[in-house]
Image (cartoon, rainbow, N blue to C red):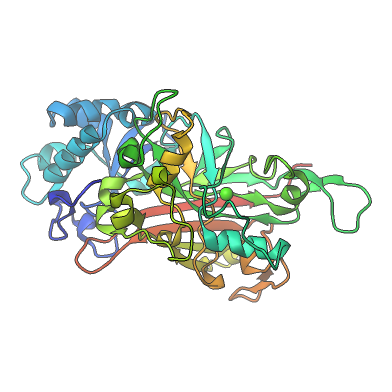
Length: 438
Ligand code: CA
């Protein structure tokens, strides 16, 4: 498990002024990765690191020859149009690059002149997916989400008996994952409304978002070789924001007995920036279970996981309807919660996914599942906030919502802050619902 080092020092300042502003998501203590190019250009997509309101172009850095050793090898791997080669490197290599970037971006660094010409403003950038995602697995690790959903179907017994023993998951679809800015048509599917005598095909009427974190696999494992929980975090490259859009009415009809299918695989949206686990180190918190809950089986348990396996990442969901956009009204907040409330940690997710020998590969994406906090106003999906569509939300401009309507844009944001540590953020993850295709 990573500990704090000189790159986390909250007193560090960059020679780039915008990185020193109190509310920036991207101070010198963060240094997240994305794949980008200038908007509307024919440039090749390549890796970049966020610093203040700029992107450090890693292809330009590689050409400059500023770094040497493991950091130079890592920069070279990040010049491609996906970060898979960088992700395939071992954690010490990622860490060497982080240290080299931190030192070269600090006030007074001799590399300033050479790196200043490698900056591209975020305001003129466009992003692609940060990795070629071979496989996508979605988990269900929030006990509050599972309980809120379960209560709607089984008021007396909301939580199924396996939940507190297994990090529940299912295999999702990688091909329809898009980067922030994704716009997709409302899905069409087969539904069976209550009281109907036969199902029919039509546009989804209960379209929802899901507030999740994405976990990008780094080095992975060979087929047949499980990753022990003590090694699990070293195999993870970093985390992003993830909106796992869901068609609740399609899901309700199709999911038994094999689970969600077309209700989930029409679109999933991630933020462009991947924040490394090393950057998140100051925000580790203890992973605890109520004493009368089952304690994790040995393969899901370790002293480090108990002491600091959870992460205090603050998360929020905002909604901007088409009317709000037309009237220049800002998105309105629906939810504020923290990843710390999850029932299973990143390390437990990785250890469980591989315990049967399943191989994870560089660039694979895992979703945490909808992250809801202990109270209903911390819920990470509309199905919870509106109690299954029965209690509409009233928005500040007088509009109301049970589920998403055409033109709605959903914004996810994430950040970490506390006294004694630098505030770091994930940027945002935006997706917009378009009318169904006819
Ligand atoms: Ca999900």
